[in-house]
Length: 366
Image (cartoon, rainbow, N blue to C red; front, side, top):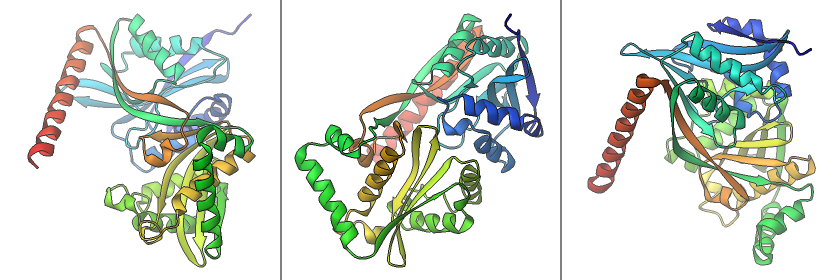
């Protein structure tokens, strides 16, 4: 006879220590989960004060086994309680962490949200259309009388890999393109003492983090205002993800100089490149394509190690499109019961319309 499923709600950051072992075990079983739902990731956000509101963890259990976890922060605006799925301050997939063998845990989680009156409005900033379980959770809330609305916000590119790198090249490039990219690779490595070193797990030390942060500060990313890796929070986050066996760094050097880096998260047979940059003096002013070659090195390594999927994350940068074979959408989802849901969705739509008008006016009139 199957064990009855039960739910439990944990409040406050101190509750994480009570769930540490169970959370890590659930994450290992949830083979489709993105790295951003790991305890190492979310706990760093909480410990470093990078969340707004009160932490609340909705859990579902089968006996003593944790089978689902939904991390939320609860904030209040004008008397309306809003539950946002953690994390919310970086571009990453967010949603429910669930053991794929227990689909019923979705119903249990939705029932808790309704019966416990967790919040008036539920908001998930970055819901992937490929996240089967989070989308089912919102569908379950709809069956409980919630009004749900989805807004498409971003596109995320992916590439499905083969164990043979040459097969991947043939799938993604015609003959002329293959010859060109391999020619660039040969030129880079023949230009003099160019090496690519990979750092994993606890090899991702503060020293390594300082080196890649320096590359980012001297790259095109700086001009976009997105050079964040010098910030203490990101230093801590990337080191902790390394300790959890999730972080990977590729660092390219030429002689004694750091040229380019790529930081990715690895979960089982999936790789998530997250931050990549090269120093401008080794990029725009050079005929050598250090950044492209570093990405190719990452793809080579992924093929050798049996990685099935490269998920490039948000955006359609040119270097991503060169490799991508597939894509999925990232949506913002708002859900609320009855009239409250309608009002929340209406207010958010007005805010979006206002922001868009402001952007268009600035673009037109400077």
